[in-house]
Structure formats: C-alpha cells, structure tokens
Image (cartoon, rainbow, N blue to C red; front, side, top):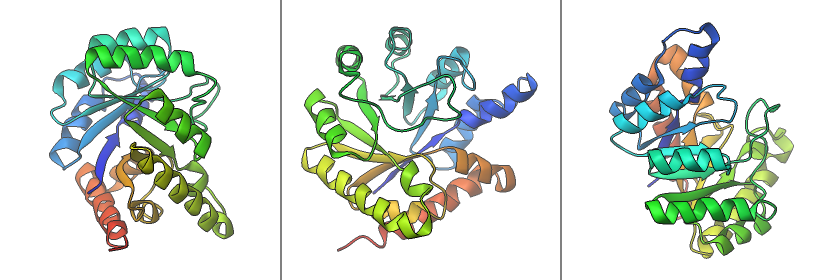
Length: 244
C-alpha cells in the first residue's frame, strides 16, 4: 500500500569523506533492492557533495526497480536527466550553503523553470514529482502545472516539539487530502525515522515514502536488510492505524 524508496546519498557521503572507492552507492542500491525496496532515490546536487555523475550513471544502468532522481530545476540537471532518463524526477530546492534540503520548492516563484523540466519529462516519458512544503497554495500550484505527484516535506513534523507534533501532523493530513482530491499522488519524506514514520504512514492518502538518512544510519548498526525490514514494520504499523 505504500512504496518505500530508499535514498542512498549518504552511502556516497561516507565514501567521499575519505576519498576512497568504497562504500559503493551502486552496491548499496543493489542490496536495497534485494532487501525489498520498491525504488532507489538519489540526489545529484550542483556541488556534487555526495552523488557524482558517474554514480548516477551506474545506478541508472543497474537499478531494476525504479530510479527517482532528485535534482534542482536547472538547465544542467535537465540536460543530465534527459540523457539518463530516470523513472521519476523529483524537483527540490537547492542552496549551496544548506546542510540538507531546507523547505519545499517555491512552485509559484520557479514556475518557468519547472515548466521547462516538465516539458522534457513529457517528451522522455518521465514521471515528475515536486517536493513541496505543507502548504495548500503549493499543492494547488503543483496541480496547475499538471505534475503527477507531490512529495510533502515532513521536516516540520519530524522536528517539532512534542506539544506541536499533533498540529504539524494535522497540517500534513490536510495537505495530503487536498492533493489527493486534486488527483495528485501523494508522497512524503524528510526527517522520517522508524518512530515518527508511523503516524505519517497512517495517513490514508500517502502512497510513497522516500527515506534516506535515518535508514542508512540504522544500517550502520544493523545492515541494510534489517534497516529496511525495520522501516517496513513501522510503515505497516502505521497502515494498520488507517481508518477502515
């Protein structure tokens, strides 16, 4: 009922820290697929701080499930994506000084750039998803662009103080209902771990989760197979809470 896509960026982060050839993100992608991941997500950033062009090329050649390429809506990335032809492109905001992706895409302010990517995706037969804030205006703007999917930024929910957690979860639920009502597929991601993913998975509109940092962190201690199994178990617990 919920697709689990594993983001393997931080396997490359560990590799790059020492300038070695290992750990290999391509091998990690293969292990994730063998462990039951429904797809592989990776982010090719402008500064190449984790994934490199050669990594994504090798991953594209080896992935047998689905490849979701996260990228900024730039001319350089659009050219690369048109050549690689991932199954899905997720457009995300990007700033060089950020530690990780902060906030959602400004769908209104960057509409011309998004439209150029959307045109390429239509030509190449690539599904387009937009990583957006939990904001009804962004949901509606995404629908107006004709994209197939939105991915809701779950960071504010994940990092909220306990007394504010329910409020942020309610905002997620409202945005998810709005998106589904407009005919959009609804994904979610950012900051999710085995504990806080349960409530997100309980939202009946969610059909996909993109999880990276926490899952790779778990894999350091338990291995990728057990890490993915642990997230599957948590997601299933959330699905079990959905209203009948």
